[in-house]
Image (cartoon, rainbow, N blue to C red; front, top):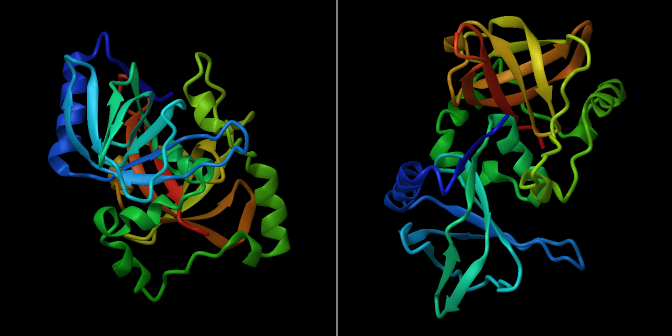
Amino acid sequence: RMRVIKSDTGFLAYQKIFKQLQLSGSVLLFWQLDPDSGRRQVSESTLRSYNIHSGFLYLELPRESRINRGLPIYCYAEEGQFIFKTNIHAIKGNNFTLEVPPEVKLLEGSEVSGIKAQIGVDLSNIWLVKRFQSEAEVAADPNYLKARSMAERSSRDQNFLNTEFENISLEEEERMFADKRESPRTRPKVEKWVKVKSLLNHQVNLLKLFDLSRGGMSFIVINPLLFPKGSAVEVLGFDEFNLDDPLSGMVMSQRPIDETQIEFKIGIKFTDD
């Protein structure tokens, strides 16, 4: 389950999060959900300054952006992989001011990949150079199979994957901020195994599946060094089913399952179209 930091109890954490966001100059995606059409206009900005004491975040307003002061706004930061929902306080010239959100949610790797489906934007293109500088080297490997779109896959693969994948709601960001969040990921009802190959050493591992969505998945390992963050992987199959064409992915996160830190959950984002 994603980690939640609340403004009333996590003041120091808030200071650290927004200080790093400002110093790094990282891209901050923001969007609003039109209640009538259900459409989203996604824009990019940067955090110019902030004041946690007064309760405001100050951002640059892109020229092409049209925001509605009366609607809530959603923001996603690649730096730290977190998302928050808040309200617009003021719009003036090339700047707009947001209220400090009541809570910030830190995302798992599979949840990050789910943002792509939720807002209709391919985040991998935005941060490809910054985050995945080794991807070009991986693609140059003669043993590397270029990712295929679902439409290009065999009917056998399509039938299997469409059965395994869940449907992700367009209103998932609203459910993300509900008191009782309905997970966009599918947890297997019975123990399921996945065949994963690391493109660092081309070793194939049979691992326990933790969760699965159209955007990504996570699995359990004992040695997280086998799947370093940013490394490329291929999913070859599930249980006894071998895919005709592997699913390509990128490791986004590593987190211990519990305090014993014996088993780790590896979150990957699918890089197929």
